[in-house]
Amino acid sequence: MKTVKALIFDMDGVITETSENHYLAWKSLAGTLGFDFERAFNEKLKGVSRRDSLELILQAAGKATAYSEAEKKRLMDEKNALYLASIQGFTRENLLPGVAAFLGEIKGEGMKVAIASASQSAPLLVQKLGIEAWVDHIVDPAGLPGKPDPAIFLSAMDHFGLTPEECLGVEDAVAGIAAIKAAGMFALGIGDRTVLTRADLVIENFESITLKGLLEVAHGKNH
Ligand code: BG6
Ligand code: MG
Image 1 (cartoon, helix red, strand yellow):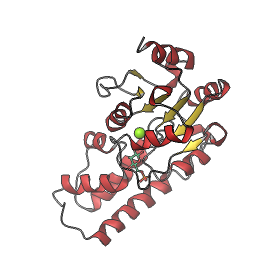
Image 2: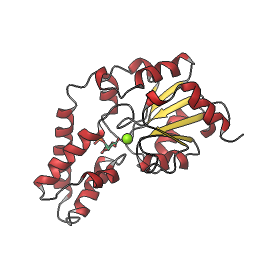
Image 3: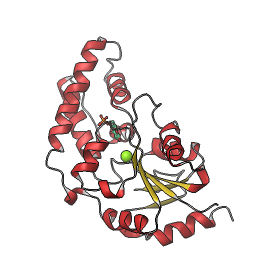
Image 4: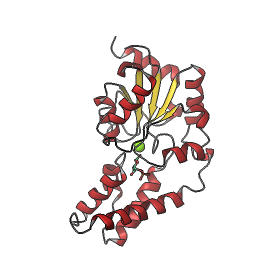
C-alpha cells in the first residue's frame, strides 16, 4: 500500500456518539406513527440519509405509501428538530474517547483529515465539538448517493487530489464500511468486529490504537 496521506472520518458514532440522538429522535417520531421502534432495527439506519431512513421506517411500519411528499417532508423536519434540540448542548466533552488525541496525532504528522458524513448537521457538530482546527474538509452530502455508494469517500479523496491507496476511511456502520471498501480504501471499523465483518481492522475506540500502530497495519496490508 502507498503511504496514507489522508484519513476520512464518518461523524456519527465515530467522532461523537450522536447515533443515540438520531435513534431516539426517530423512535419518538415513529411512536407518533404507531410504530414500535426497536434498537436492533436502528442498525439498519446507521449511516443512512434522513430521507432513506424515513422510507425504511415507513416500510417497516407497513406505511410505505401512506404519506404524501409534503407529509414526508414534515415528518423529516419533525425528526430533525428533535435531533437538533438533543445536540444543542454538545461541547468538546462529547468527543468519543481518544478522538481528540488521535486527531492531534494526525495533524502532527502533516496528514489531511476529512469528514464524510451523510448528516447535514456535520458542519454544526464540527463547530460544537471544537475540532475545526483539525478538520481540513467536510464533504457536502447533498446530491451525492448515500452509503454504501463510495461517492462521499471518493469526493473527499478528490478534494485532496489523492488515490484510494493514499486514503484511509473510518466508519461505525455496515453501510459505511461497504462504501469505504467500494472506494478501494483501507477501512477502519469502530465497534463490533462480528458486525463490521468487511472492515480491514476493527477497534473499540481510539484509545485502543495509536496512529503509528494503525498505519503499520494499513501499510503492511498489501505487502
Ligand atoms: C448519518 C447517521 O451519519 O447521518 C444517520 O448515521 C442519519 O443516523 C444521517 O440519519 C443523516 O443525518 P441528518 O442529520 O442529515 O438527518
Ligand atoms: Mg456513523
